Picture 1 (spheres, rainbow, N blue to C red):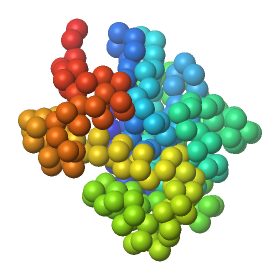
Picture 2 (cartoon, rainbow, N blue to C red; picture 1 turned 60 degrees about the vertical axis):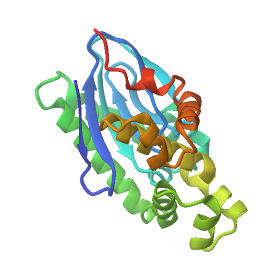
Picture 3 (cartoon, rainbow, N blue to C red; picture 1 turned 135 degrees about the horizontal axis):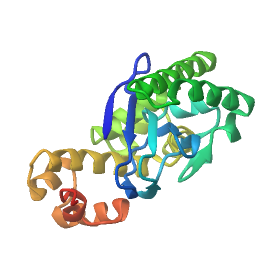
Length: 241
């Protein structure tokens, strides 16, 4: 079971919940986002921005609730630069201390025993906490949304830097703090997501490559393999029982 919907009060954020059926590995693709997570087995966690796909393992019946924060928003919520969380899964208590312990206690009441509304109750708590942290921080840095939108639309790093009034090196430094990596890496990841959305919609891979800004289908295949760890045909193959 996996469900997601738009979060309330946090632009472009997504709340989601899942229950692991058979257990085993799950390939999590990079997306430029940071996630605030709760697992019935591991508790409250922060998933940092990944440069390549991560393979995670869940136990059968494990419940997950997450709040996926769009590129550039996570640092204002978690209170640390995104690059400090890059390619990491960190217990929330390592960042928030006592506040994380108190949040875990709220989760215990809301999600145990797992009734029909455990996912909604838990996701609402995550939203409330994230909104409060954003208010306390004065909101996310507006540069993050602007840069991510321009790169997602296919703008070059140089053009994006000029548009926001920064030099390329300055944009790189700001991007590491906001996204966890430089704008070139973020652009590759956003292009991958755009290409996969097209492919999952039934667009042939050769056309996907052209429409997503790759030189050709071979370029698309190389990029998918490097970022996702497997070729497009395997990544897009329907799941088997």
